[in-house]
Length: 326
Image: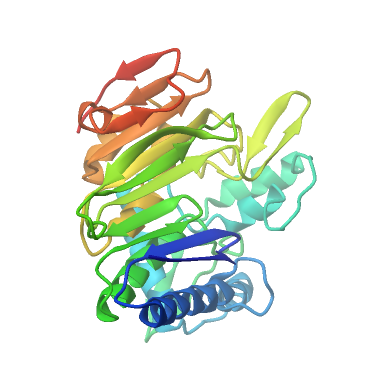
């Protein structure tokens, strides 16, 4: 076994893998982490020298921009997923995220100016506003600013999985800030077991096993947030109303194996978070999820039947509702 940690995409990355020898393991891990670091620098939403920042400057001024193959893929996927989620997920709301102060490593406990927020909402920035012309993108909407923070980690998981398989690694666990994917099983034949953090305690709420190619993604209000006048505001911004209210505590989704399992696990948690427990099942079906778990504002847990069977509770909830499908 070989384990290495790093800090990428503004979060901790943990890579655990098995290989024939330490040198092979170290080489494979270093290559994956180097690629993640490259993508982080390229896709950083507010670093002035990133490609996303350059694209945002062009979009704001109404100028065309030629994206790299990686950025073009994210744009195409983002447009598709924006439609699939009924606009509950949108990488076009970077200006809204910045207005709330979350385009910074540290942020103040303050509300955005009401008039500025209203203007951004009135503009209704969406990736659907981007037009493609000869390999370039163009949008006549200054309020449209790209931020791939809601999909880049999961998208990178899929790339890392392919990279590890190409390097001959068939047993691994990759965790990018709570977005987790596994390859195969451990050498003794046992499955990988991972934990989901309790949104209000610094410990695991539960654990579950992951099968080869499955991906687990969690969105919650407990990592990037601030409190003001007794209310909590988090980095999860609802594209419909620009609200940063923490309406639920966390949502975890389990994506089925597939070439885009990581991407699905990252993106799908956001629409379910905004939809809440009553509407989550409808959205989960659109993403063909293997299961989902939601902790509502009162701390009650809502979970699908199939996923419940796989859970081992470390801190059982006071209220548990088995609901929805799958």
